[in-house]
Image (spheres, rainbow, N blue to C red):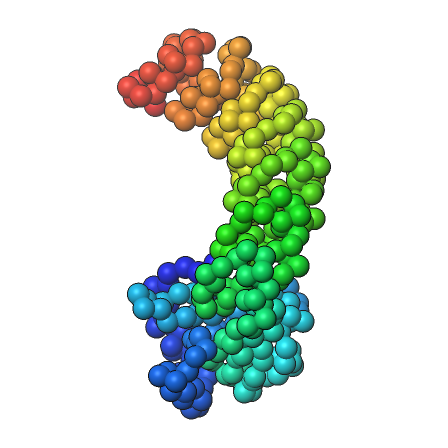
Length: 328
């Protein structure tokens, strides 16, 4: 799920080109001097991977450039967009994203699953009042648009306070909702042994698909309570029980998460370690295995060295032979 981000001139040119192709005429002719709603362009595409899902992007013209905000959402969340129309050879469409913070009204054209057009956002004054009563003041029109896009509700604000987040700013509330940090997810992480996480930590956990099941997998690998950042790194480097089992079979026990990650990053396998051992190298450590891999010290090179009279069992000596070009 993406938040506002800068987009390149090339990307904007592509969007403009798509809009020109899809539209026979410019239907957006409101006078900006009297227009109070926010406005901009949208592009969308039906997901080929996830049926019933729509990837939609809203582009806003800001004083200092352009902002883009996009996400994948269910078609059920979009009022007035018929999937059959969206996949037509070409059809004009009008649909809306109706949220508690306000309504984003969209008009444009879809052509074979891809669409483009213009949007306007109308804020809901009742939502502003409700949030002010909860201590959120100074809410800008841009804040409201982002709140609508990420489906921030008064219920969500109340749930976050009940979970101990009474001091969140409105922007942090938007960020939490936008990254699907729900009350259920907070409680799940608490039950898994991670109480007291900040909203930013919960967002990072959600972004990296950290949940109670993965935390249990980490424990099953032999890593008891780990800092959240270590758990995230293990996920990012695709450390799983099968790899841990391989490393244990290779003779590497009681390794830290950082050591396991180093072994994975340097493509150390059980077969590689066993080949070194078969050539007479005993006492291979995680560090020596990594150094051997980095310098391309493998079964073939060791056998070449032996054929040339170098019967060393020192990884460091073999590295020197390799670096000096003595054994080729």
